[in-house]
Image (cartoon, rainbow, N blue to C red; front, top):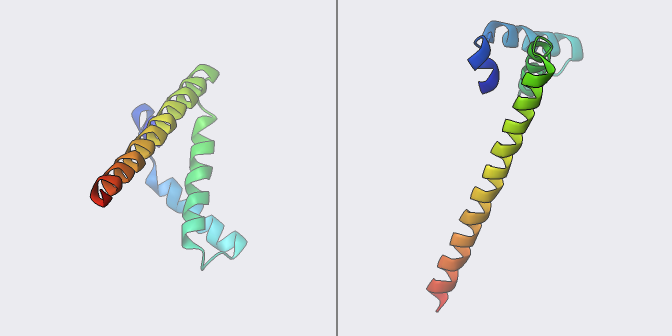
Length: 90
């Protein structure tokens, strides 16, 4: 979503429209989170159709870097908790 917003801005009305369509079409009235995920995914898919292959490749690479950073941060946090726990036990 951030990548899309840097290109043209996010059309929240369109996301809401997709949300309503999923609600009415698939009778998912009690799965609000699922409907929102589907609506955002549909919006991203529609918007990515307008991008070139190079832009999509760049987006994929950036997303992979962000996922790696998240995993490293989680590993550091887990290591810190373990070290603090071990220090408290000694």
